[in-house]
Length: 218
Image (tube, rainbow, N blue to C red; front, top):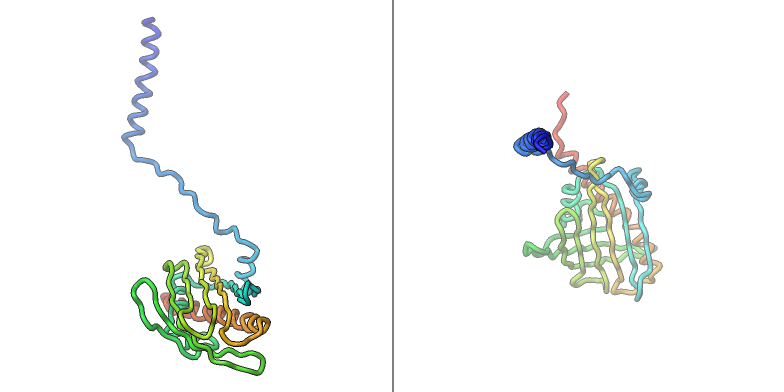
């Protein structure tokens, strides 16, 4: 029995010393699990090549659904600055002839846009007063308050792509004019205008981003 106690004592003492040294030493950080951003969908792969993807659909009660996707070589901060630059949309977004902020309570803004819509050989000026709100740098919602549409609402969504130092931008909207326009004509207009708008946002955001980068001295 004495031999057993002695051998047990010899085993326990070194083990306790080892445990004490581990506990008293610096704490080892656990490895952090990182989302694999290199796993891209087929759609995202197409967007990275410069393609603009637009889908137009017919919804209930004559409402037209619009969805646009584009990749922008600029971080979400720069993309957000552009899509919320309401006072200057008239200067770089096609078919917008006037725009600006009416009010801002810190939570949501009220803004207006006046645009020119072309259908075949005809053109019509349209006016929209809408509220905009959302989650900074990730999602922006908009909805008409008054204007030339029975339905005009939707959202912008920004997804950061760190590997490319860029942003996947998505635009979704539901549109129904408050004036006579066949739905096939509305769909044709949206199918033409949506990619132009997305490309304008891309061009402006990438230009602003390049201007903000430090210049390289040769």
